[in-house]
View 1 (cartoon, one colour):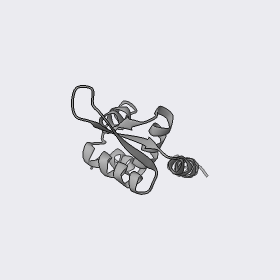
View 2 (cartoon, rainbow, N blue to C red):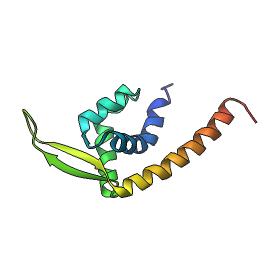
View 3 (cartoon, rainbow, N blue to C red):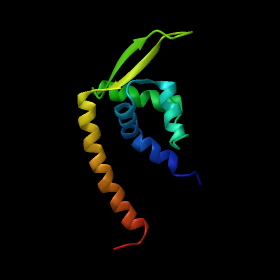
View 4 (cartoon, rainbow, N blue to C red):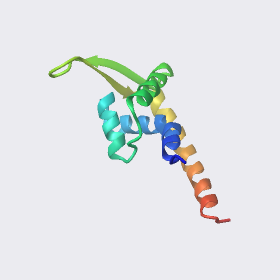
Amino acid sequence: MSPPQGAWTRALLQLCLLGVLESEGASYGYALIARLSAAGLDTVKPATLYPALARLAEEGMVGIRWAAGENGPGRKYYSITQQGRARLEDQRRAWGDFKAAVTVLAEGRK
């Protein structure tokens, strides 16, 4: 049986990305993967990350800008928009409620 963390990460990836972009500012794909991995979400691969970022961009949650690379090709930087901040706040509230309910059930409390 595969561990459930991969499915949980995929389900919550957009929330995590918006949170990182809000707290740490604009970033590029590789740095976002490294940040997620440092936080313990080391199952996120580029094939998962970039489609999630593209969806966020299509929905207006993140902005994209290209910047020249220091010693190589340019990088695509992602930053959270005002609309993204509003969604992040909504998702934080929803996550808090969901997490509390799951904790009660998983711990067998009433």
